[in-house]
Image 1 (cartoon, helix red, strand yellow):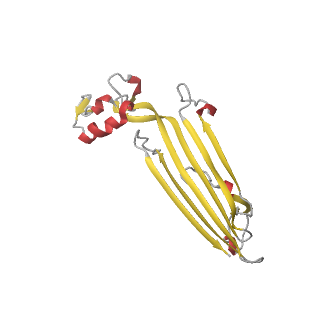
Image 2 (spheres, rainbow, N blue to C red):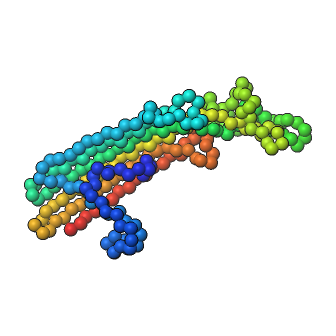
Image 3 (cartoon, rainbow, N blue to C red):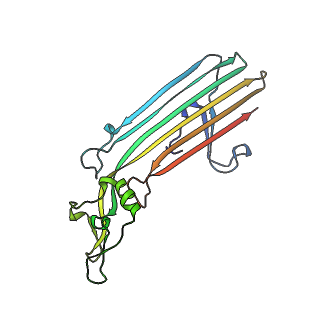
Length: 239
């Protein structure tokens, strides 16, 4: 799950937790959570829900300048079940959607203004800088994508990162807001057939698909998110 949460809880009728050694039907050793999903009945029944949260309920972080960064979370969905043929064939459907936009203040390590122009620190011959050619892709595409996160000629000297000897390194630290988005959909359907008073058959299909953006914990490059996609399908038939 891209969202990192369990979706489709409203489709579960009951569950059991097994902590010790289990039989073959539960996979043998290890903990197991056995869940039974809801099924349709002779009467039509269902529900709908919506959970909403935004930054109003968040407190200001230590590194937030004034107010908490933008945050929105919405979980919504519903279920419906009923008969297709009374006392014989039943259908149950469930859906849950998850949407989240989460932001956090981050510190980025980026080339300082001199490095963007091709002037890099040089300590080999006593000169402060050495001029190099800046690749066109950096000058025309990468730097513009970073936008106002990059240092300018007016950036305070306190933002500059110095080496252990107090010399410039060609890097600055700039504050920015990093945004992570998540979008996920969960679908579930179950069909029950009562063959006789002692025999029954059910089939269940579950589909879960999500996508989201996140940022590398190593590089923290602004405007260069990592894209995540997940798709899971499950089919069950039991007599």
